[in-house]
Length: 283
Image (cartoon, rainbow, N blue to C red; front, side):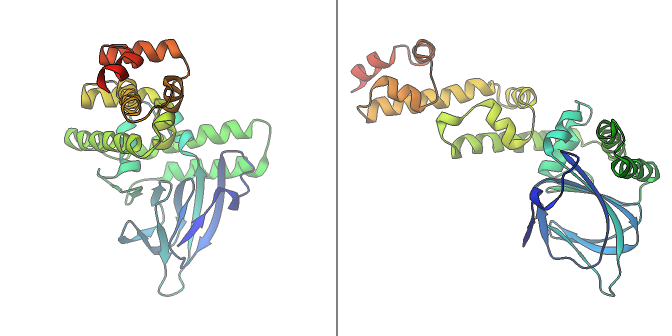
């Protein structure tokens, strides 16, 4: 399977690239960025997430990073398609609480119109979306002063217009998506070095803002995400105190603390005694 990398594009407009091209049959591939595809003309089979369907003029596809997809034509038919590629950070920068569940659905799947890692919007009136994308192409071609700001503004409008055409997830779907995201957070903390654990790093990995992940984790678990991470670090420190003869300061650095006073304070709060006292009493 082919990987379409960010380096394969010119990215002359920094974090957004827009291209119109014709497709017939392509191999399955995936991207290192988010892709918005607007079908300008034609009809062809499209496969993604193990599902194949006919796409046609006016349909909109939105793919998360790493989602395999491809086109297939039995009669060398072609479609004309405009691709807008951009970073997850751009998407999250424009999303407020009105659409956060839909962004969850894009990244996690499980809601109306969404599958794991992609959205397929068919049989909807996307005329206005098509006109906005045409304006983006015109701005990119002209490169007049301020064109980048206009392109970002137009893309923001396009994404919001797309989300408006999608039914919001039901309350039960939202709960399932939030639980899945919490599981992803916990899996991340289990699979990465405790020294590097932070809300900021988890946010960058999962493409959700630190404040949103904090609220979500607290709502679903009854515990703050920062406290959950702190407990992971302190548990690792406790285990090293018991199983090794490493100096306390070395242990402190190995679990991600650089401030000795702070480390001693949080360890005392957690275990009722300072690290040195804990080691003497339990060994």
